[in-house]
Length: 206
Ligand SMILES: O=C(O)[C@@H](CO)OP(=O)(O)O
Image (cartoon, rainbow, N blue to C red; front, side):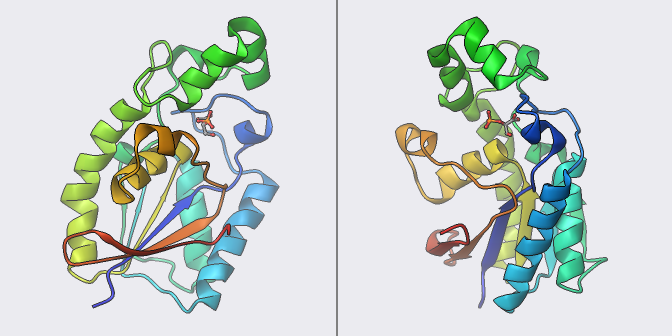
């Protein structure tokens, strides 16, 4: 049985381009982001992959990325579940702030801690651990059972919601996940065993 799980971070958003903390805000894809989503779809098509079910967040940059990928695969109208459990990590009070300006104001180290520590949240926002605490229950109750039943599954979501899932899938330590950066619009292809363990992983960025 093909237990296929493809994860893809949305293409570049307007706020990625402007270098702003984005979180739960809802900027659109840039032209480059749209192009990245088309490329992701083409890459999956070249690998002759297709899907039985899709999952995405409540945010349009991820939904549009998924739509474009499905269009490239000739699979528009595929059964799709949208849920805010897959949303980006909430950046709280620093949402909308420029990342360079935040470094000037709060210091390089503090901003790095807010962006990449495991369990220290930015003020009023979510840490990666808190993000995992909503992503993983949703993954385990809604996504994984479908993958294990043989439904080929694609998940279009966000840098940090996917990092929290990858940490669990690949059994990474908080130190290891800190260093893991996900490219915009770049699919990662997993094949799972009957218990949900990873048999193989192929990051199309490599
Ligand atoms: O701004 C954000 O919401 C995220 C993803 O773009 O940024 P970071 O890389 O700081 O986690």
